[in-house]
Length: 369
View 1 (tube, rainbow, N blue to C red):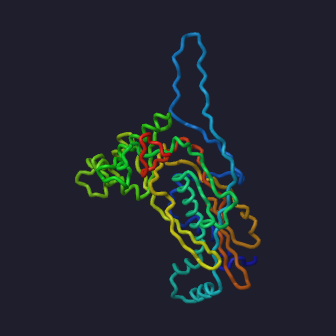
View 2 (cartoon, rainbow, N blue to C red):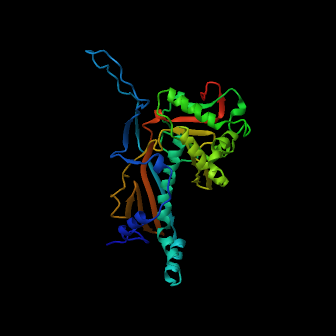
View 3 (cartoon, rainbow, N blue to C red):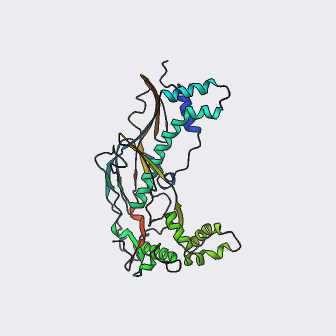
């Protein structure tokens, strides 16, 4: 059997690493869990689910009144490929050979040489999935700029159809009620939560059980006098760090959504041919919160990459959670390649039950326009 990878010859070894390694928990796995589709083309219906429709009191001998099914838009699209590659050049491979010949080299270091690039490309795909899910659930649009995605497909802007009426803000004519502008006494996040929940229910939609925000909004929220007074009684004689869980317990008891804090960073690496540019990005936009009836707000729709099963004569391959990892080497010059790829994209079939709340805007009608 020909040797196709310099470091890993047996696909079972690669598969074992993918299956047994303890991978970082990603936000998308809760907010947009993976859902398989057999083709790269997708079609889904945005169905509106709201308050329960009531039956009617009628007279004996009359027919039952007909009630109608909810209607919604149909979204079409094509799942894009997400790809990443890393290589070990001659210098890297010589270092690996030297480490292997030294009996005192720690086994952990050897394992890092063998599987380091595998872990890197797998995590890189997972990081992009997290970025997509969080960006979409925060902005409800997605822009693929040439700065961050120089190889993006022709369609670079995706809109997920959040209705204008579901983009709301602080319901007040006072600018001091905006989070981050007013003082800890002037901002009133609990009042805002009540206003948002009333708006949702008055629209006949499912009440929110969760609200997502990043650490910027969380710090503003947790310091507000109204929040401290609201949740403080639950933390009597407890350390300050207990305030968060206590506030969530109080929110739940009051029929208000619990806070879920999103705190992550995604690192971009772009090579323009002459300069390597690295930037660190927070996918969740400041001042935006998302209210939702459940933690699952959509799906990360995926299908098998075209290369799956088609490179076995030249590479070592393994597959896990919609991510294909391939390893191979070239002889002139000697170079070991590791590639990760996935074909996936977020979808939000229940977008009519999600609400975007902007904390930095105040309008008397509560609409963010």
